[in-house]
Image (cartoon, rainbow, N blue to C red; front, side, top):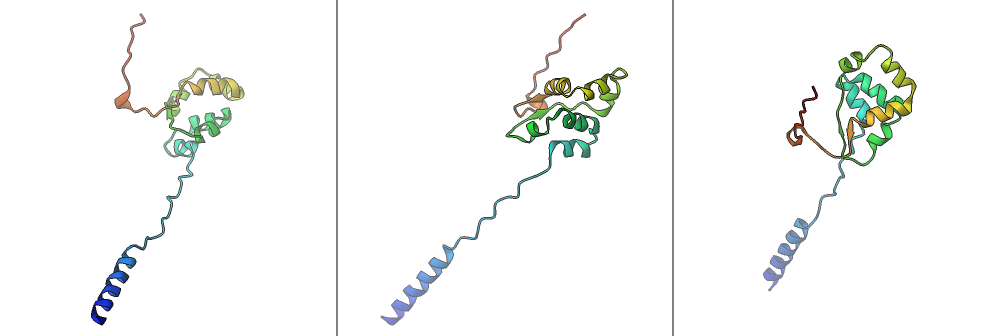
Length: 119
C-alpha cells in the first residue's frame, strides 16, 4: 500500500512539474522608422522630403504600406529649382509623395505591367 501511494505521489509530482509553463516574453517591437531605413539604404533625399512634408507619422501608423522610393539620382534629375520649390511647400510636397505610397502591401510579383503607347 505504501509503495502504491509513493508511486502515485511520484507520478503526480512528475505530471504537475511537466505542466509548468515558462513565462512568455513578448517580442520586442521594431522601433526603426521608415525614414531611418530609407537613409540607411541611400534614399536620403526621399527621407528628407518625407520629413519636410510631415508624412513620418503617416508611415508610422497602422500599415501595411508600400512605398515606391525614387532614388537620389531621380531627385537630381529634376529641373533646377524643382526640388527646392517642393521642399519649400510642404503641402504640395506631401501631395506628390502620396502618389508614391499605397495603403497595401505590394511586391513586384503581384504588380501587373500596364505599358501604354502614348505616341
